[in-house]
Length: 119
Image (tube, rainbow, N blue to C red; front, side, top):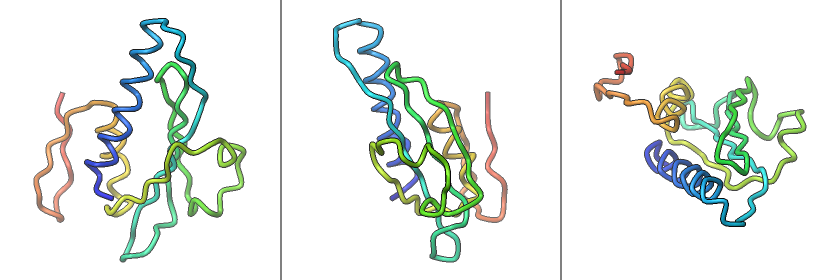
C-alpha cells in the first residue's frame, strides 16, 4: 500500500475519533492498534511501527527493530484496526509518521536525497 493511502486512512480515523470525543455524542470507541510494516529489497523489513490509537483520537507511536510477527510485547495483542504493509523502504518510517502527524513534508522525488520537513 502506498504511504499516502496509509496516511489518509489513519488520519481519517483520528479525525473521526476526535470529532466524536469533542461532540460528546455518546459514540464509544475502544483502543486499537495500527501496525505498519515496511519493505526492504522487496521483502518485509526487520523494523516496523505500531500506532496505538486511543478513543479520544490521540495516539502513541512504538517503533520496533524486528518484524511485526516477531514482536514480543503486549501491544501486539491489542486489537488491530488494520495491518498496513507500506510499499516504501523502512527508511521512510519517520516521513510517514510526520505525515500522519500533519507535518508538511516536501518530497524531492530523488531517491538519493533526504526528504525535507518544512514548518
